[in-house]
Length: 210
Image (cartoon, rainbow, N blue to C red):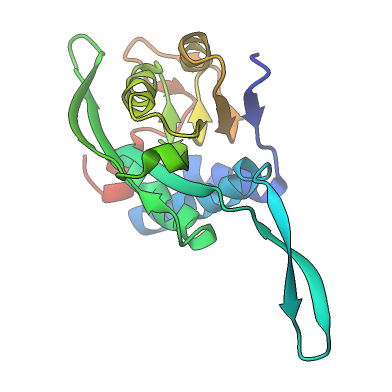
């Protein structure tokens, strides 16, 4: 596996992922779990944000403390399933800006089709974390990152909940410098490019559509 791929095996993430996979988990709980897992994963994905020291006056004395050193974040969900991760990461970093990239997979060719892109105007000043619950073939993620790179952000990371080996290989071959965070590396893709064992269609389960 590429050195830039991180499988987050925290017990809380793994516990919630087990419930997420269950076919009997309803839409409301599924949506909440995606948000909670995204928040826990974001905690790990932002571990390398630099800090600076500042003086803070407490009720008792002056404390020498640390704050984030001015580097700004932007979250970019890949529509539509990536929207399910946004609330969770914003709970952790409420000052972050949010862009959107709209893509769908052509059912005949299985290739991604880009239909929407709206990103923060100050993206060159920001570190970007791209959000999508599933990394299957990797096509949508690769295309999304290609688009974001045109705006010259400070850095890009990719965060998904479940990844297929085929998608990880394709993505890391295309963007070897980008750090990828996932909660599980699953077994394989099936003939319809669904992740096995996976959790089904994340977008359908988040939004209650079939």
